[in-house]
Length: 527
Image (cartoon, rainbow, N blue to C red):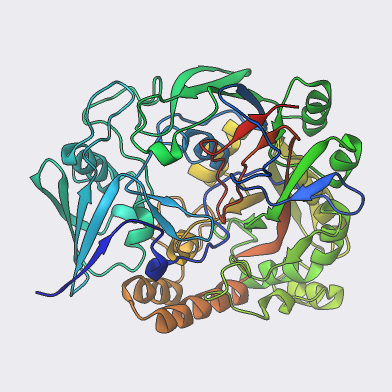
């Protein structure tokens, strides 16, 4: 049988996976700064010849949310994943251009029928506890994710795995039930040591940094892994301290006072407040901010009501007032950053039309409007501000919206896990494959907190999952986006910009098409 074989010496250009904007929960939803602002750049590890690199040092980072779970397979929060991504390495890593970069994998083969993936892993990889990483650990990790260990599957990305075999200590053979065009992108998931059951308390991975401690309400600390297998990615920093700081203004003040070195998300006001002497690394947010509607509760179970809400909301006003004009209006759960798969024109499907909204409400039996509760995670001021603007806009059509602010942990439990809400404002962050984005709206998806169920949509996404022809696959996803928009599953608002503020002496930060804080290439220079 013929196969496709790749020796991984660089990014997988033939498998470049344009980064989509979404899926997962959370994300620093701060708008990028505009206008008069400090030095703006797109940092890379290669800096000016005048920079004198300092070995070691501690970087202190302001982070808006508490970790939801330190176990990479149980965490649902994007900020948590962004921090802990430094602790865990997968077979591949997400590259700066949305490509797959070899990490633990050395080479791979795919059978001609697309059902068998053979991964050869590097022989010099050790976990943070000193134990060698072998094919047994990869199989154990994937079996947990796929539910092949007799437990519930932990990730739908691996639900298509039929079996896993280990011909030797450094070879893993994964057999799929059917072709899955999204499977390669799933292999960025971190590998964990076999039979280690304390990941939520003392996580152990094979990444460039080791877990030291987590003090709730205070900080999460990582330190350099001196035994890291990849010399080219060996960290220069000794230590990372993620300081839990929910208040954005406090983070800016801490950066100014010297108590913080980096803030991953600043507003226009924050950037102006910083003034000179700080670097701002700018890039697209790669996020879909939306007002999710619970399609299973009255009156939101009526498509006419959901459409009316869409007609009542002016996204451009939200972008101007909340994001300081720095956002791209959206019409479905995909951003223009996903060029190949993005369906143009949907952003104008629901141009603000108060009369049309009132007409639809009357047709649905709600001529006098209704009461609506918008649940918002209180630690994301960007979403709170958005909810306030939307609340005012909905008044024009008789919808009386009340804001309910809850803690992030409560939002994850009540809204994301159990769909106990009516409407919510959240940002869904970027992934490497469109299936990870649109697959979240499938009827069978465990965390489908929109409670959207549509057989036509399920069929489209199901076909796209097994379609290996890129153009045909893109067409299917575009049809799925059209359906999401027509059904008004949510109010898809914008893709905000993103800025990261840092001391000028902190260098090497890279922007990725997914939210990723990669501290391995970062370093301090002498001021």
